[in-house]
Length: 150
Image (cartoon, rainbow, N blue to C red; front, top):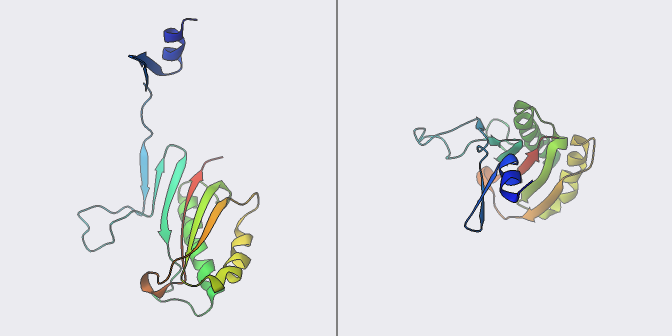
């Protein structure tokens, strides 16, 4: 099969030394969406699904707007928030491929990990645990991640 015919069959167009895709961009789906019209809300959506990839915005683990006393309780809350966004997109924690944890004090590393381990049934995703200094609302943890549907 000639190169141009094969490329077209695979959804590509070759021209002037460049390869262009002819496939449509994935439809985006927003979870806890916010728009520029909602000026009173923070300017981000909770998560965005593009094709089979879910991008989860940074989540906090507050209770009624306050930081729980125990780091483990806050870790549970923040991971529940991530899990709920994944569930809304038809995914599980095991669909996460990358996680970033921002922590106001890395002394909470073990407390976070104790809770974190319980949210996965398969391999753990790639992860960064970053000492960030002060977080919004005095939170200890902020978690964001990327998931790809299995």
